[in-house]
Structures are given as structure tokens and as C-alpha cells.
Length: 240
Ligand code: FE
Image (cartoon, rainbow, N blue to C red; front, top):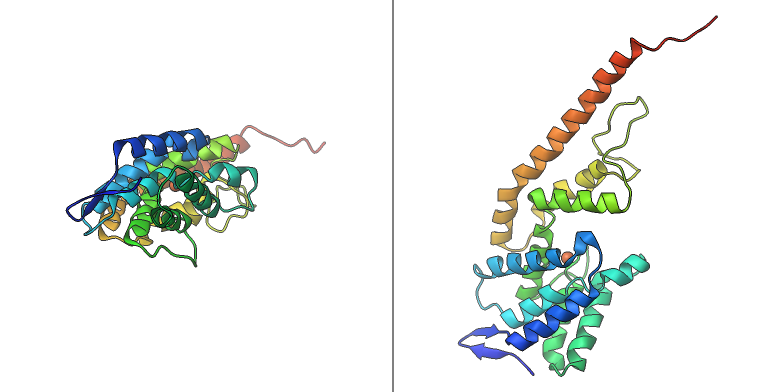
């Protein structure tokens, strides 16, 4: 089995898509990286690809579908990197199902380099599109919603309190919370894209995330400030 070339564009055969989709579905089971995430990454990638030249759609679609199949292994053993594990799993699956090693290797490279790191950066156009498409799912309302779901699953709070009892913005916090994640990751994701289209999409979504964070911070910090002042009126210490 291999790719079909129509003009300069490599398409994917329907039965290949179904095979990879079913394999992906059998591997997914955490809510922040459920199959919804995979389809959004795939559709983000297709939107980015429309603005790029000579995209190998066969490689791109396969890499998008399979990019997070190593999540379960990383969840069970946090020392493992899901991008690395997933890339090898994908390669093994593809070769086992009769795809050419060269093609499977291109898919493997995209998956291995899709995670944000200082080294082993994506080299191919398809790898860069996958990287951007994956990061776009951390932007805007979606990024907020996914983070809140995840924080709920791992039972982490929305925010932490500072030693003086006020609500922390999340900046520099050592204990995990939604605000900490926002300051550490969500706020900074907007600068790290390879493609022009991804930067545009991210910028369009950014204000929603910023506004949500700022509204939530204002609401809770005001409550703590006013609420504690009000509470003090009704609490007395008996020194007798
Ligand atoms: Fe992902």
C-alpha cells in the first residue's frame, strides 16, 4: 500500500483513513486528549495546509490521526514521552499493515517532533503543520475549556491563595492550579508557531482566552478581598 499522487498532491485512500482512524480510536482514553482533540488537530492542519505549497496530505493526515496514540503510555509512566512512544507505535503499526517503511518513517518523524521542546524540532513541512495544528488546540476558548476539564479530572483547584490570603494570579505559583497553568503555558502559546496561518488563527482566538482569565481573576480576587472584610464584621474573638 502507498500513496496516490494526483498532480503534485498526495492524497490518502479511504480505506487507509478508516484503518488509521480506527486504530487511533482504540488508543484514546483521556478527556483532554480524547478523539475530539484529534479531529480538531486534523481540521486545523487542513486549514493551515491550504495556505502552504506542496503539502503531502497522505503523510499529514496519517500524522494528525496518530499523533497522540502514545498518551496512554505516558499517563501510566510519566517518565515516557508520548511523542516518542507514539511515533514508534505508529511506525510499527504502519509497517505491520504493509505501508512502505520510507512513508511510515515520514509519519513517525512528524509525530516524534510534534511536542514543544528545545531540541528535535520538526524538520518537514508536514511536521511543522502538525506541530502548529496541535498547539492551536491550546489557544482561545478551546485551550481554556480543555485545561479546565483536565484540572477537574486530576482534582486540581482553579487558583491558589498567597500567604496574605489573597488570590494568586498564578504567576510563579509552585502548586498546580488553573491559573498556574494559564500563566505557565496558555498565556505564552501564541508566539510559538511555524506557519503564518497558525499565527493568524491563534491571534484571532487570543482575546477570548485573555478575557476569560482576567474576568475569572477579577471575580474571585474581589470576592476574597470584600468577603473577608465583610466576614470580619461578624466574627469576634473572646479574650476573657
Ligand atoms: Fe495532541
